[in-house]
Length: 125
Image (cartoon, rainbow, N blue to C red; front, side, top):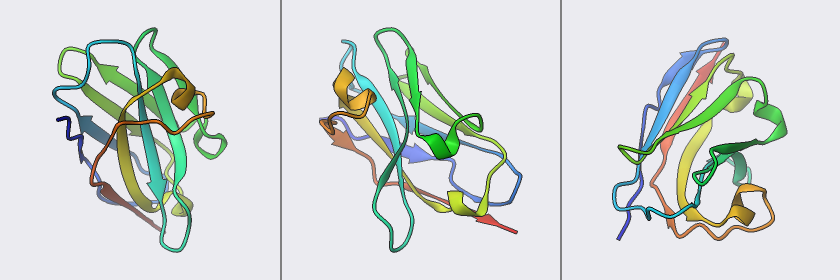
């Protein structure tokens, strides 16, 4: 059983940076998609970024393009979300999702097998 564990959430001022980490020991060695999602109070969960481990291709939702970067360390099975130029609207609970198909990465499926418990990011003015 894989249990993704997120860390790195914090309270920061607008314009600041954070790095979230998702440790997913036991995740498959085969190519798969790792994704980050977020959910703000009163809003639906939305995709943020994804990375396909087969070729390290990355995908970003429009609001975070140019500000967030997803990366992975295959040796430690850790996926990172580097967040720069944080805005008030980035405030949310951030969740890691593991072992999705390539279709999950490109946003045409939501077939991740495992989800983390989330880490809170709060951006203040």
